[in-house]
Length: 351
Image 1 (cartoon, rainbow, N blue to C red):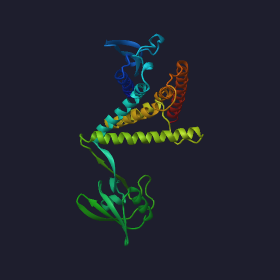
Image 2: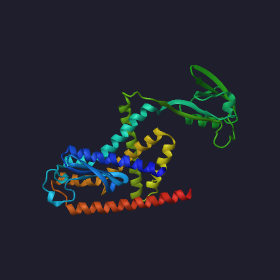
Image 3: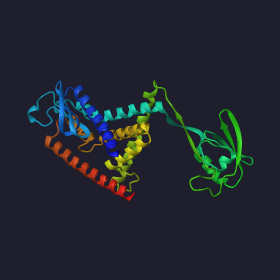
Image 4: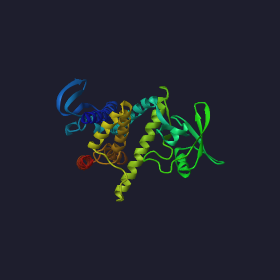
């Protein structure tokens, strides 16, 4: 089941990416010879207009075949990618990245209508453990704890961390909580435990400072876009730190997952329901967009470097240099993927 979920996840991400290249190539007047679902060998295909739409045996992703990619005799055709202006090439190269970002935006636009956690300045009770000081004092779920009072000292609680620190400080001493329950204000007294059972804490409650907010459909695209931008910036920031640590030979604090690790995470996301899987898919799509924009050979960012060179120098890059640079980049990426996959498998066996 996990393998099928992984194949579905990967296929959606790659197909959206390739569809972005496909649509942008069409828009820029480049002839698309084939749009393939899955990887060869080919099972069957339907030709519509000038493009062959094929279904292939290996159900992993897809591909786009542009006119003249493999044939020198088409070099002078205006329908080839190579003869388009640099700005047109840039849009075609970025088509896949744009496609993945749009998918992330679309999914987050849906998810914000289902409810997203929004930070507040409140301390909200999520769960009360049976026979704990909180349970015996009468605290219940959804209570909002606004103040902690000890003798004549009153402390406003504007975050979960403040409550955690204060209850540790007053462990073994009787304190009072000012509690908002629906429209009522209550004062509840209790004694935080000095040596609580493992995982329960002095009070025996789970708390949060987040509330779930559902956005109406008409504002969903706006808030979905904000969420997509925020997530993208976080991914870019973490990736930047990781690359900096790598080139400066510093210890990595980020655990990188390969195909096996992603398959495992996809399987876990499905267990938590549809929305959890969709969020996982959106995160992966945005991650794929960022990864592909890196100026590394064989990636879209690597191709963009050659387009930038052409735009600045007004000269087309050497075909062989571009070809072999991308080939070397592809081999390096394949090797890294293999190493990460081996690492994933070792971790699974250790578990």
